[in-house]
Image 1 (spheres, rainbow, N blue to C red):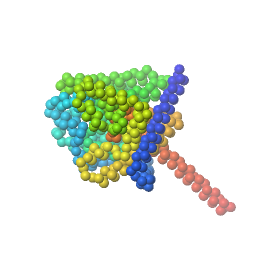
Image 2: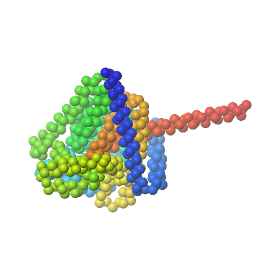
Image 3: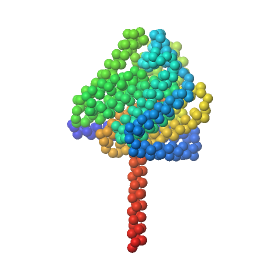
Image 4: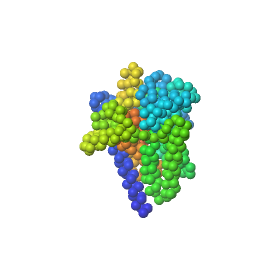
Amino acid sequence: MSKFLSLFQRFSVIVILLVGVLFFFFGFVSNLTMIEDVYSMRDLILFMLVGLVILSIGVALLRLPLPNLAFVPLMLVAAFVIRLVWVLNVDTSLLSDFAKLYNASVSASNGDFSFSENAYFTRWVYQIGFVMYQSVVISLFGENVMVLKMLNVVFGTATVWLVYLIGRSVFNEVTGRIAGSLYAIYLPSIVMTSVLTNQYLATFLIFAGLYLLVKRFEVSKWSWIGIGVLLALGHIIRPIGPFVLLAVGIYVLVVYLLKGDHKLKALGKLAGIIGVFFIIQISVSQAFMASGVTDYPLGNRDPLWKFVLGLNHETDGTYSGSDVEILAPLDEEEREQKQRELIEERLSDPGKVLVLMKNKFQIMWGEEHDSSFYWSLTGIEAPNLKTLLYQIDKVMFSLYFIFGVIASAKLLLSKPSANQMKSLLFVLLVIGYAMIHLIIEVQTRYRFFAMPALIMLQGYGIYLVTEQLKLMFKRDAGTGTSSLRETKQTMIK
């Protein structure tokens, strides 16, 4: 039985990593396809070469024997200053959902919860968690949006630190430094600080929980409580908790439950994480309902909407104004029935569905323009800045996928160490997130959540490449020294 479980564990690891390799490879191909439609091959080669040169210089600097007490503060200060400069100089307008959430937060801070009767909040009740967070901040500091933006700066910088810590824990110090530094300069994580989005706080909380999982799950008796609390709070701010719990469950199954030792202990901790998650979720829901904030528990009372959008062939799974017009006049029962009809109709032709999924993958992971730039710069006259940001981001994003392929292939072809087994969690997060968006609505800004995991994996890929280059240079240097020695001996003779 133990031998079978060991073989099944190895098989599971191979499948997960193989899917990871394919994801990164097709992500890179999608990026090339999009780039070729916009830039000439000469420009593309030039951008990639410049990107590689800058990356090489950066990695060389990161490999300097700088103690952590010096490196980590420098990295975090740089990340904070970059984001602060952006927030102070870019006055992003409040638009769309962000305006609705902010206005509702102002009302809530004044004790007025009538906003919760609006269809937006009765259908997607999960939005109220973020509204109440903002309302607390507004109650303490007033209605100046700059305070909320500054908190985005703080949480964004804290996530840089988490990426470094996870990279160091899962792989090694150099990988942690590379990943942390690259996330510090990842453009969408910088430009979205001026947008009042729930992504910063939610991403920080969830990745803090995942850091506890890979660092303390096996060695700490009570870490499951902290993990469950952090994942639950992250879910209340942005509703991606069930997906994260699924990834955590598969990870614990493959890494711990299929091992020979401490199966019951690991199973108990996993059950504890799930239990704490739902206890907090239910408790917060009941508290909001009891205090008159909302009549409904936190959750999605219109779960089919994202599938209606995601399966729309005309818009390639992006937002559809025509779907809004079709469904808006209908009451709740009629709306649900019509949504089921639309979904059934859009799934009726398997061939078209496969084409749709291909197009959606290309939009989500190979889109020419990350919509983060749209949301942060809409209404701001800076065409040259937009073009520059798009070009830099596209080169960086393409490089992420190249090194992601290398990292996943290395993990696939070698027997991973105990620490490297922990990388499965982040491979699962990335590929699982990509697969979910094959059937629900896609926007490129939605990939924000997966980027810390993706960047951490490609940081390991960069580490592997630089290690190989270092070995090659040493070998060449050794050959050169040997040849010089032989030449001198010949001259002496």
